[in-house]
Length: 351
Image 1 (spheres, one colour):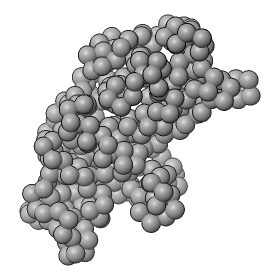
Image 2 (image 1 turned 90 degrees about the vertical axis):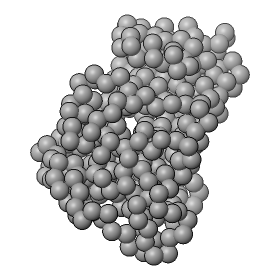
Image 3 (image 1 turned 180 degrees about the vertical axis):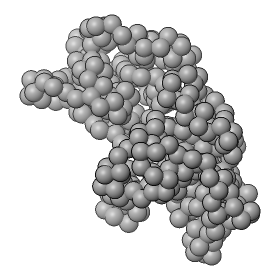
Image 4 (image 1 turned 180 degrees about the horizontal axis):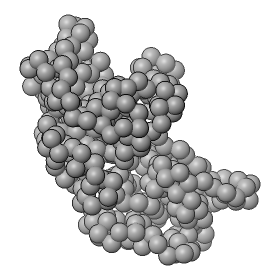
């Protein structure tokens, strides 16, 4: 491996990240270094770039660090005591951090582990570089026949969508209806995972006609413009007779309007899964304002099992990631396109 490498790093709070040169990491005992083949970009990265230092410090994040939490590549070096992988193996790197030993992790709820507050690409070095240090083989997922250049988004966009669908799955039986609000990078994966793992009728909601069309191409039964007033009433027209509302809503936008429309379209006993970080609130009293016996779930990330599930679905051909490639030297352009909403697929930086 080379001695030095380029990396896109957040050097200080409230300052644009920069492409700089840093030492290539070397593995210690139990660690692995992955040569990054591709790293997906996420809207949360844009939030981090504007985050006040007081918030970052409160989260336990310390600058500088390399951005990027959707990485995949090939094993480049292994430390002492590692025999589960070999150099050259294609792997995806699990996005959220977790300790593996707390009660939540032992129960399979590692997405709620406190260690995840500081993770790869948010508080410690991520994958927007040529090489990435991984602390444990527990964080590596074999890719089989998948191309590691484009597999990175499966570890966050795919895994988070998988987690959201899994949390709603108990109400998605034969004849049920699931609504996905916001069918961008995560939403189109949620649509595909719903089709692959449930029997629900899938309704895609988005302001962008291209996104609605893509969602239908990828498996949605119906697509609805997210703009009209009374969106909750429109969505209830897709409900099974006699139910009064749809069975599940996965909101990947998270504004006041989408939360109100999603909860307003939900049947009694339905499940509302909030994924989007649009800053929305629900301003009505919960008693009488929420559907009776509804389940409301706040999804922030995913588990290792979700990442493995997303990778397995992709390898089977049940889901696919639409990708817009950028070289590492154009990573700032990729973020600008992400911010402007001009991407057709998931932005992936290829070092």
